[in-house]
Image 1 (tube, helix red, strand yellow):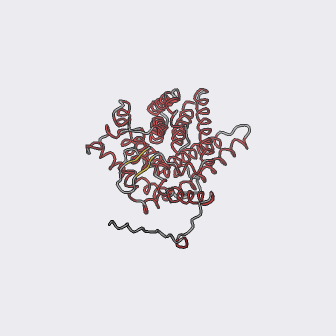
Image 2 (image 1 turned 180 degrees about the horizontal axis):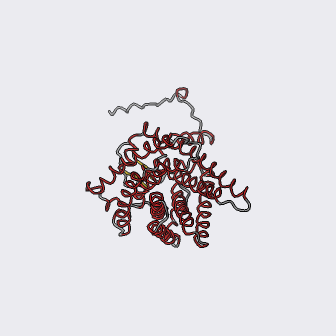
Image 3 (image 1 turned 60 degrees about the vertical axis):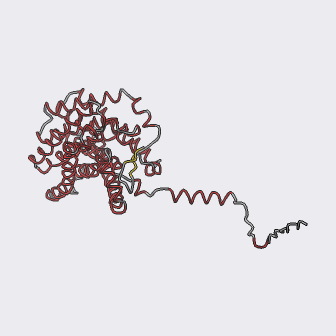
Length: 385
């Protein structure tokens, strides 16, 4: 006889089960905000050396307005009061703004070097990021040249500051230029891109600043170093070798650095030679031709201007350097055409600067939290988007 299988009764004690209420809309929003805050990188992670192009633009504008104010003092017009006070007031305000912004960015980047040194190391290994390591020193050199007369009453204090700024530039020159012709993976033909011209601009700006102290030999040395490598970089980029294609589409405004380099070279040679001679005019005409070539191809920058980013500031300082060169050219030639060209380029430079300043003020959160270049904190490898 088959015995029936025993049955098991499952008894669930409802008191032991905790009642879970469905999540409300408010709790979901709070959780999302919490996750966003946790995943959002800090400002020290986002602020890399490429942000100093803002400071280069501010320093260049301060130098432009300083020259305009000095010109107004020398040759006042009938409306004497307005022609002198407006440029000098604008110069002082822009210089103060430039100083404040540069101090803030320098402080943030110093903290980045302390707390995120691996990211700084990754910038140095990046074929684009390494060139922006020249940008902080270029910014300070421009600010030094454009400083009001009461800042450096003693010329020796100016010289001490200049040496503190130029030593890192020369050190980077030795490292970067040395890699271009000695290290196989860092040959110029492999890593060349328009931002490579920043290293050359650093030498020209340093040479231009050295002449204020009367150090003609030092200025000539820096100018020679910059000019030799500018010819190599320019030819390499003109040949469209492999390295010139390794650039994100959103970084295409840096093509305007083709305009900045010969413009700054003409200003540096003018300060060394004492006049805007034929060599300066040749460099100025080259920069003017390159500017016309880029301005006639707006579709090249279509993708890069869809969303505001720090890369837009690459439009500003090349135009400022071109305006500075055109002003020096007009002072030498003294013709109606040269004066009109200088006025148009200066006005265009100021307009672009003011527009970018307004966009940056209105979209400061997007500017600081949307870097184009990102660097890994552990591997030191590049991660550009």
